[in-house]
Image (cartoon, rainbow, N blue to C red; front, top):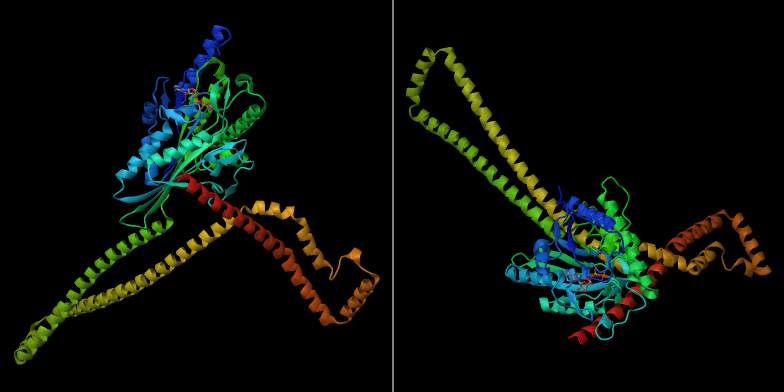
Length: 586
Ligand SMILES: Nc1ncnc2c1ncn2[C@@H]1O[C@H](COP(=O)(O)OP(=O)(O)OP(=O)(O)O)[C@@H](O)[C@H]1O
């Protein structure tokens, strides 16, 4: 049974002090507030944090230190904040922001987590060697942008095209060409995090002077190697997600560009809600629509996947936000029913090695037991042989005496003794036979074990080969991209394909370009073909072969070549960008 884990849900309230007041009758107001309280109490949230809860209390109550430990142990972890605009998501995740959008005080979950992570790394430094990498992206108007890209340093401007997202064989969505930085200390990570936060798109509206207009994902990836056993390699990631808040245009008063942003934000949150609703209902067999938005694609592993996940539902209990708060609590309740299956991300090679080691140990144990048995049985046989020899010597020296005695005894002994002796001899023979049989069995057993070991070794080498092939295959797939997209680009170039097939259909030239001479020539040619069956046969073979090769392989190869060239170009530009930026950053 795999380790199943429900998504943990925490609810944080923030008393919003705003000009917007409730303009309705008091009875209705009390009724609604009561309903909200009932919803909050009836839902079994893992943690309910009061308005007075400080950032430290939030960090402790939500047991985020334990989650950081899980990342160190090799599990993927996601923490995400969800709620309506102005409910305190960014405050919870990052802390209090300044005018530039950088968290400057009241450290939120992200800075606290970074410090905790490096403390734990320090504690384990004697056992394991850790490498930490981080990246930071935002999803703005359904496009993915790198917050730590080359333009992020001085004058950050949103590039026209966002980054591409690819799906890989392990059913994960990956962002292409995202800058990933190796960090040696908590300060390095925080520096990058602040740099990215400053580049995040924010805008001011009636409810929040610095409202996030994009969803952001700050990812910290950890790779660690056991110093005693370098084969023991673990990789895991921690995703810290600050979602943009759902908003009603009528309340926020956004217009134009901001209104468009609101629509996109609400759309992606809608998909997230659909995914949560489907996954929380075990009777619903519908496939969750992860692919409907970039946000849900990137959170696929976190919600209903293989991560430990914590959702922090933020609510601002002001009457005017009643509907939004109720909706947040309802989806938080649903999320609490979603089951994830966290998997330790250790190296698959290591698993095989450990299994083989265990097998070897058990075989060694069996072998030592069998050897003991052989020794015991051999001793019995030897003793018996010695007894027989001693008997023989006695018989020779006192042969005459014994002969006489035996003659006498034989005469005296009854026929019953003879029967007993005969039976004993028979039993002895049987014992010797069975000992020999056991010996043979043990020998053949040993041979079989040796053969099994050989097979295991072969299996291991084949497994390694498969791994390499899979890796190559995976790299090629990633470089050539999604076959669906290749098909699209394939369809975008119909001329190439049409040209190829035309050549196959008619030898020489296109029908409309045929001169009278060519028509006559073709007619004569066909007549000769019909008369000569051998030639007809040969031509048919050539035609079939060229149809096979041209219609199937040529378009595909040209297609892949084009994709490959595109990937090469992308890589070259990315390499230049990266080295340029790394110089600047130093
Ligand atoms: N618990 C809190 N204590 C003190 N101030 C808070 C708290 N929660 C939020 N705030 C303040 O409220 C304002 C809005 O909060 P914040 O920007 O975190 O909301 P948000 O949910 O991220 O909104 P949006 O979705 O629009 O980005 C900020 O000025 C923030 O500092």
